[in-house]
Image (tube, rainbow, N blue to C red; front, side, top):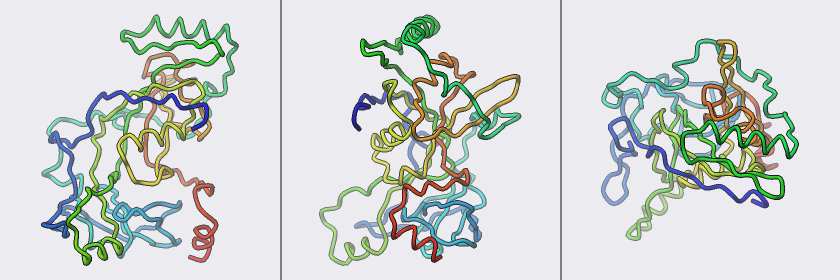
Length: 298
């Protein structure tokens, strides 16, 4: 990052499974493959957008039924990766929480995706920023204040909720005792540790008014050493107006702290949510020229 280096993360909830622990892929002795994941119901699936394999992490190329997707948990993979999946389906009976799910999605009654919301485009003068910061700080019941700087910028906290349906992947634990045969197997199939995040997971980030959406996403992934491509994720703005719920995907250059200041501290007015980037839009900047050529040939 250049001038947007102020990104600090504060723990709110530790990412874990419904039973209080992370549900990781099963490993056999000496890093060998363990038992196959259970509960999945895979079917051929055609994507209207570019996506990634949840098993190996590579792009899924093609146009028609180029992958398999679980009808229960949306786990998506190459046809060739199906036999290597060890992560159980998140909707398997043994993994379901006992309590009712009160995620944000379950509360939405009328959603308008990508509805135009003008708060992100609202430009403020230095005096207006000072006034809004004073109003904001007077409304919060914690020490998560916004602070104005002499150069006209300001710093503060945003809360990001995780609503990821598909699993996230971490790098494997280093194994100094791996054999040459295991190293060759690792080259053919990348070893990753995957688990599902609970829908109520959230993190606080301390950022500046110049920090952009893409930097927030990358900071979250780096914090938890997530090896998935950042383009797999998107930050959404959820708001309620006139008894309707609006969901908008934020562009990469949007400034989340500016949105928070304009909306005030109420999460009913504005909530920031990290979700899979499956809106049908293609971010061609995330691909190299050879990758684009491969897609066009598929």
